[in-house]
Image 1 (spheres, rainbow, N blue to C red):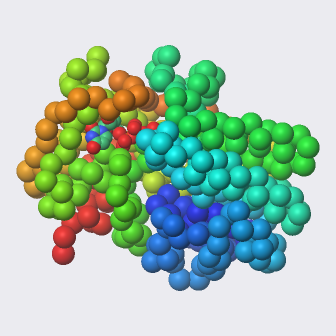
Image 2 (image 1 turned 60 degrees about the vertical axis):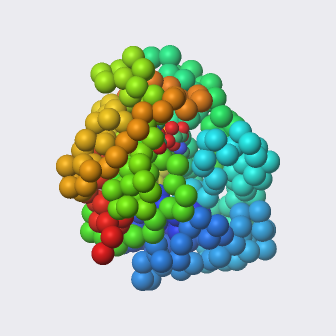
Length: 322
Ligand code: WQD
């Protein structure tokens, strides 16, 4: 298959592009390089530099008639989306509408969409399955949910078959070290911990130790980006063979606390990693853990790299100073 990966130069997208290429697919990447990096791409991948809202550039990426699109081109910072919702309307909502129109015009009818656990909002129960109420608590999560709903209409009206993949906390790097791009100004826990381990930042702030969890710190479901990438490949094959749309959670189904991550990071890196308990971050739930039974059943997906040691050691190869 020829697959167009929108956002394929970014952190998750570049791992998806690599997985597709390894499986023998032809890969084109469309990316505005706002956060993505050319250096994340592998030899043999075609790059179209452009923004989804730039219709002329986007149409060029469809000239070679991709059979399917994987769409990860979006802004993804929860806090920023509350301060600057316009950016999220433009990038996520308008960008996706533009992409759907380009797909429709080009007769491309298969799409894998990168969604998020943020569509559920504060969990009412855990583990969170796909039947859980959809109640995003950030504008970012809202944009992803709106796109999911738009996709259901495009399926009905235009015959676009889609896989919506709701990622929990993506982390780790390609175990073979072929992707080395560090995210700029990371907000997520693992890159922050590893920046401290690498001496790039003085200490980790632990956002709260008074949650009702095993050790008081926040519990999340960390899933390795290579496991996520594999799920994209399986989803593509699934929608191509069944011509049926699907929506699934992608998570390791294991809850790890912030303090457990810190401890594992000290073991893996051999560095002290100073940390300080600070107040809770606004809007942070105590526990977010996936029920990923549906992905396992529907796609035959099995996470292989999502234990804390592998998450941290594959990322440490990228963060470790030479
Ligand atoms: C993880 C845990 C923090 C940083 C968000 C989005 C989600 C997805 C991933 C985009 C929490 C704690 C963090 C730090 C800390 N985003 N923490 N110190 O908030 O679970 O998920 O990012 O698609 O949709 O909601 O991820 O990595 O920010 O935090 O103590 O410096 O680490 O409180 O418990 P989060 P995170």
